[in-house]
Length: 109
Image 1 (cartoon, rainbow, N blue to C red):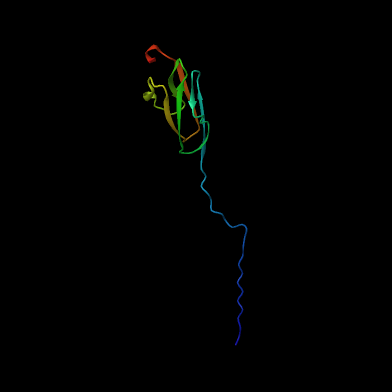
Image 2 (image 1 turned 90 degrees about the vertical axis):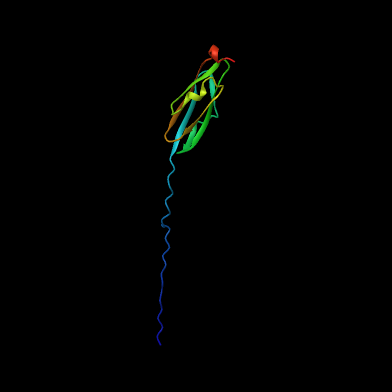
């Protein structure tokens, strides 16, 4: 009777391929305001693509909200409103600014 010896060799390697994680794109949002009001929250920062950020423009006493600039905003719902809220969808770097103007007589309560 003969005995057959079988040797198996298993090779371990530190160079095993790791699964590639998807790259998540980030964009920068810069939010500012003109004289006469402020924007809250302070949302300036980096956000992942597709994130939606809601900001609110609030005029100081003697001022009223005028407009948003730097993004795809619809200002139509802000006429004579004390605050103007909008949402920004991050699909590119965005520079957004809220503008305020001196309050007009017909805007006063």
